[in-house]
Length: 460
Image: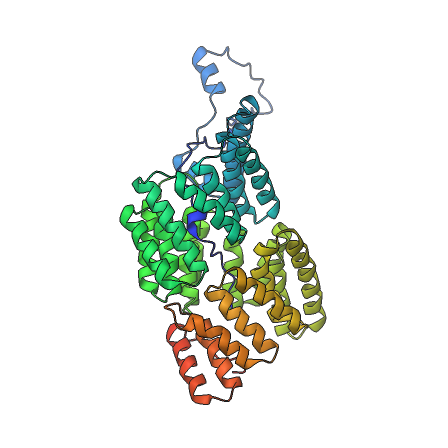
């Protein structure tokens, strides 16, 4: 039942404000010229000053044309790179100003979210190191806390965050940001009570696109889908900056809300809405491919996945291709994709282990042949962030290792909280089935189906 998801918390995904960077220049259109008849010798008239002006002035594009061009992944990336180039020139002129490298780091973090490349995070780290070597302020510590958080280095993120808190003024914006980040930490720790408290305090201070979206994620993870959708839609109305990614991201998550409830057509409609804001964004394309697979349109899905792999070299989509191949009975092709994906996961875990744990774990749970290694990976992931998803995957790793009692024990803490999902209950049902408790298994699978009617036990 596991679905790939872009659920990094939106506090880190939405720029705090629009920087007013100029749009990329649109190519000019040359004026059309009529061809003279073959039998006629045309003597050009002497150009008037008005003619000269008309010749020089390019044909202006309509607002609709410019808006369409701006709503693409390519344009978004180009605008971001152009803006950062300007920041780098300023940093070179005034190397003692810590604000420029701080902003450059923010630009690379935005770029990393667009590209999915760890290389961009490396560049962000380097820029933040320059900023911290100067005169670090609350915003500098907060920027590094967000970077660590994005890479799932939660202990390091917490240390920087605590320093940022002492240097942040208690303004509505500052309080809203601090409380939301505390809520995100609680969410990752699997602490529903603290998360609820901090998100409520954040919204009380000021309702922003960022904290509304972070709170929506909390409501989603506690099974309040209608409230989550309302918060996402409010967040969308609050957003007025030029960047297209946040709009696309919110529509994408509205689709994931439907996907988690087995509403495939509705999810696809939201993904198409997201696509209308950021055409060509691989993150949207891969979710469309996932829906196509679930709808049985595997040939369309394969074509799209292959294109995404070509663009990103992301092993998660190689896993998707492996799953399609195995489902079709093509063992050789499936194994080939698994081998390609595993090589990439190993590279990622060597470079950024904390960030890669969760993604790689999904691969090894599905295709791994060493249960002890899978369990070790699941435990590392859980120790780092004992949230809902990590709890489910730890239980699944215990099941893969043949230890249903340990799986049951690993689910107990999360089952006592408000957190809930169809996958949580389906996994709990599988655990109870393995323990021979048929009635309990049936009770859990009914809870799963109440959220997602397509939910089932592993052998159904």
